Image (cartoon, rainbow over all chains, first blue to last red; front, top):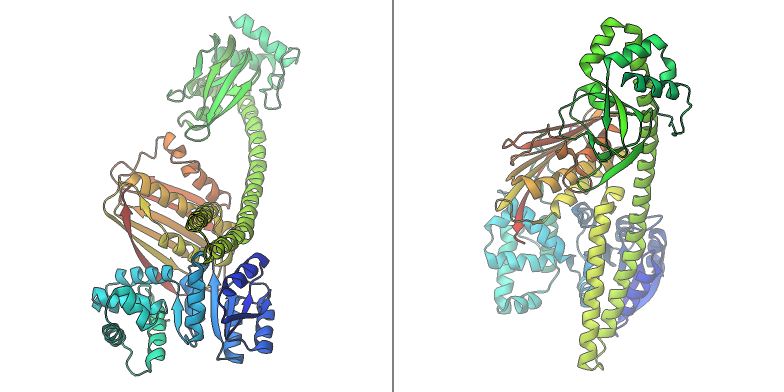
Length: 228
Length: 394
């Protein structure tokens, strides 16, 4: 049973999420919240597996609530849903620990399968970035002449995009039409090329995604060479 | 002819005419009889029939006209396709702007009935200065009073503009927070209905179509709201809103080379924010400039610089496109319902200055400079973002 808490200040949205999630018999919406503070409180009280937070809520934003929850209950998976495709938010969310966290755009919600998939992925410890943002990131990386993305082959880049979207190796293999072990090997290659070597599988992927975000997607500062 | 004119003027002086004389009327009563005689001899009385052109937009004339009898219609171009029309009666003044600054005509004037006007050229006014200074002073006093009244009206107009912007913003917020959220919830509901296994194929198909339709309504609404007042501007500030704008720009035109590369240089912001109205107007400057250059300029390179110094902020958009003739006033009003005139207005209403530099074949630079309260420190951060826009051929 995956226990879920929903936090959004719009009643329409909360109802819609609940209805979507309840189509899955193993999902159970155990609580709702209208603002960030209430979200933190309910998570503490009810100890769910996953918390779905809107990025903009009264009293405390979704990102702030996410950080608080990470501290109070580090094992809770967090999905932040946002209308903004602003990468700063994504960086903020993933900055301390990207494991079991997802950043999803409101525009992706009309595919209800997506919400369900992300809840599953996050409760299994994955790190997920909305596919629209993944596209954006890839584009930005390709615009930079010194990005490691240039070292990736086409297949590697595709695998990379799926990893960033929080997909499992089996799913990636299926989408790309390649055998599972090839997908797995390619994923390892990609991580090496992105400079991550010594973490366990899920951690490695989470780290790789975080790296993707945190690696400057802006050309280095003019004033001094500072890395964020 | 002059006698007739004299007659008309004494009637106007005595306010004894049937015609309605407005607050912006030329007050002949301020002139002594001698001064009036001088004015009449310096000027030239002209007669027009209904529908005659008194002042044309492409005239190179700079004469002042005072209407003595009859009615004229003033047509002021507001945008590329819209004109404001005003009917004026006796004692009204037309042509005064070009008379005072020597620049091209800003409106056209057409006789509505048969009418008589006293025409005074700039040279004539100069002669008046020498031969009868007090009449000259009186003339310019009158013009000053009339223009003063107009300025007051413009300040009032500014206030209503600002109120209208506020309204638009409130509308955008409500649409974004409520309507779009509701539509999202609706798409999800429809999707749930469609996922029911027991559905007949036809029904499932219909539901799927409905879902697509609601989704595209939401997408379109998002575009509209973003165009009216982007949520990013309110919540995230100018720099991030501009970055998001540039990131989401797609080009749908065949008039450009295959790519446009844009550099966006920002300095002095760190995480501080400018006053909201200034952020909104600078955002519009960029939005309008970029929209113009994509549509018309055939640029391949664009440089955008946003810089916040100690006591002012500047935003410049420069391209390497085909440019345009800045001295042609028609160009001020073209390019959609905002246009360059609107950019100027939005910068100047904060006490700033807009500079538009362009020439045929020489690219264009549009920049706005706005003074601000001096701040104690200027953050030394600076960054350059680079975008390469692919073209979608339409």
